[in-house]
Image 1 (cartoon, rainbow over the protein chains, first blue to last red):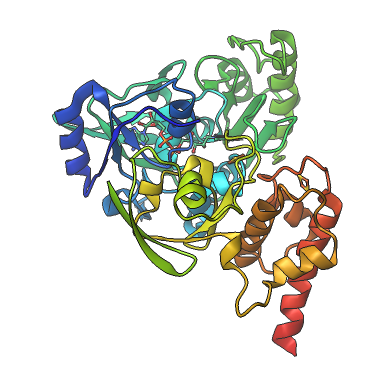
Image 2 (cartoon, chains in turn yellow, cyan):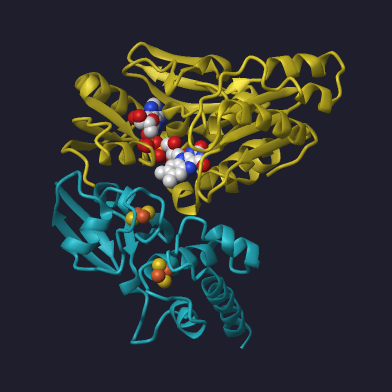
Length: 270
Length: 158
Ligand SMILES: Cc1cc2nc3c(=O)[nH]c(=O)nc-3n(C[C@H](O)[C@H](O)[C@H](O)COP(=O)(O)OP(=O)(O)OC[C@H]3O[C@@H](n4cnc5c(N)ncnc54)[C@H](O)[C@@H]3O)c2cc1C
Ligand code: FES
Ligand code: FES
């Protein structure tokens, strides 16, 4: 399978990428790891006329600490996130989530910015960002802005990114000591979660339980009111709207959300 | 567009279409046929090569994305007629049946051992998660990778 023809431009800086987006408008797409975009282009589900490669823009790389937050460049690959000593110490949930994306080859290419911008509700990093209460930095022709994880995912594969905007960095709070749990339920190797649950410090995020990564608010509220993890987990599917596919129907996904939330609240990592 | 990159130690410069995938470049332009196209959907790993020493699925990388970098395919492993230790281990442990998945398995295994020279059996299985063997010969493949790791240790101590 071969993508439709396109022009390829390598961006030299974030500003250059934004200028190229402005120049080419709807015909252009940013290319990071290419591990969501290229498969879609090969299937001709996407046919951009210009690809703007941002994978090697130096200012989009790197992981640093800024006060009590980690700042992760958008072009940071899953393998680098999973292997980062800083992330493993300060946000172990995020490093763990990155270590479960696809397989080693995919983790050598895919990036956190690409994963968040792609916004697959079944994906690992969007759920992890929602659980951690992180935020994203967006830059466009009109300047830069920050968007909280809870507001970033707006619909099925849709985000708050405006046309012409670039996701430059991801911020997550340092939580070195918080108890966290991560449950990714899969039936096959190198696959997305049938249902996923990430919990940390009273926050519960769910993957593949609706069009966007969701908070399990009813369960969170129960926990805050003093319910036991087992009691709270019984409420994990409330307010969700999971889809149905070959792997699971709605009722099964709701059941998984409850079981996996209990395990995650018990601090289990799958 | 013109791309310059190093393939198996050889510097190359070729005129390619921007949409050309790395696996097609390797097979059709360079004439290196070890990397196979199995699924073409980033699932099977038969197309695995090393890009700057790391395993990648060359059906999901544009040759343009590899420009200026270093690619190694199975053809580039042997030196002075000597097979690479991982290739030797696959032969000794009978880590292949039809052989279709083998180049990808070998490249993924080399990538794995570079990152984790002393993997447990479980780590080998997880490290090869991105590679499918339709002959289902996984048992001997895992044995071969563990044997290659042991052999590398023996060479260091010898
Ligand atoms: C076989 C397979 C299995 C997978 N399994 C999993 C899994 O288990 N869990 C999981 O979470 N993911 C999985 N993935 C997806 C993988 O994580 C991708 O790497 C990721 O979704 C996209 O990141 P990328 O850097 O490759 O983005 P690209 O494919 O380059 O881009 C994706 C989209 O984001 C846009 N984009 C990229 N970067 C930016 C940016 N900085 N600012 C604005 N827009 C941007 C692009 O224009 C494009 O629309 C899998 C992928 C494959 C092929
Ligand atoms: S052909 Fe590339 S992963 Fe199967
Ligand atoms: S040996 Fe036949 S596919 Fe693996």
